[in-house]
Length: 305
Ligand code: SAM
Image (cartoon, rainbow, N blue to C red; front, side):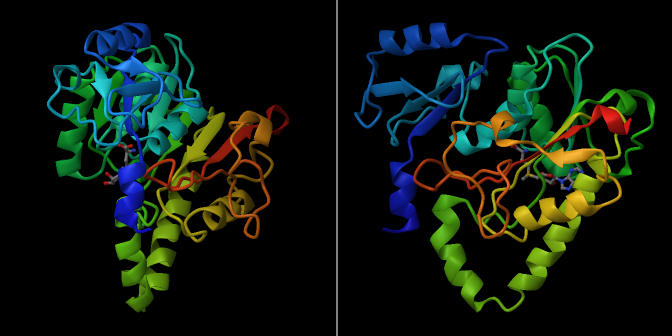
C-alpha cells in the first residue's frame, strides 16, 4: 500500500454548482450519457455522497477536465475533504449576509460558500499572493459567483472594526500549511520529513502564522462562527493551534469550541484524542479523501457581548 495506490482508490468527486445548476438536472444529464446511479467503483457508476449535499462520486479514473460542464462552471472538481469546511461553516443565505473567506485561492471553497449562500449577500475573498489572486478571480468568475468580492490583500491587514468588516458573521480560515495530509504526496513527504532536521522549526513557524490568523478572525465584532481547516496531519498545525487560540485574550469569554452536535454529528473520525478530546475537530481518513482536515468551529456567546 503506498500513496499512489491509495490515491487511485479515491473516487472522482464532482460538486454540482448550485449557483447555476441543480443536482437533479446533473443526475439526468449523466444518466443520458450512459452513467448509472449506484456503484461508483464500476466504470459507469455514480452515487450521491452521504455527507456533502450536491456532491457526486464517480469512478476514480473518470475524468472531467475537458468536459463542457466543467468548462462552463456547472460542475466543480473538488475533493470531498475540501467540501467540509464550507458545509460546517454553514454561511447564511440572505441578502444581508456578510461572510469572509480569509485565504481563498485557488477558490474552490469560495465558490462553494457562494453557492451555499444562494449567491446572495456578500462574500469577501482575500488572497495575498498576486499570482494566486489571478487564479481566484478566474475560478470565481467561471463559477458565476455574483456575491463574491475578491481582494488581493493580506487578511491580517484588515481592520475588523471598519465598514463592512464589522458586519461579518462567518469566517472561513484555510491558511497555508505543510500540506502533509495530501494523499498522493504523503509517502514521499513522510520519507522527506524523516531526513528533515528543520521540520519542527518549519511547523512551528506555520503554527505561529496560523494562530495569528485565528486571533485576527476573532477580533471581528459580529463574528459568530469561525471554521479553521488545514490539509496537515500534524497536531502542531491543528489541535495545538486551536488550543492556543482558545487561551488568548481575543477568545476569552467569547469563543468556545463548538460541541459535536454542531459539527457533523454523524462523522465518526474525530481529531487525535491524545491531543484534544474535544468533539469539534474531525479528520478524514486518507482512503476517503485526498486531504486530512481538522476543523475548528466557534461561536460567540451572547452573555459576553
Ligand atoms: N481555500 C483555498 C481553496 O480551497 O481553494 C485554498 C487556500 S490555500 C491552503 C492558502 C492560501 O492562503 C494561499 O493561496 C496563500 O497565498 C493564502 N494566504 C496565506 N496567508 C494569507 C494572508 N495573510 N492573507 C490572505 N491570504 C493568505
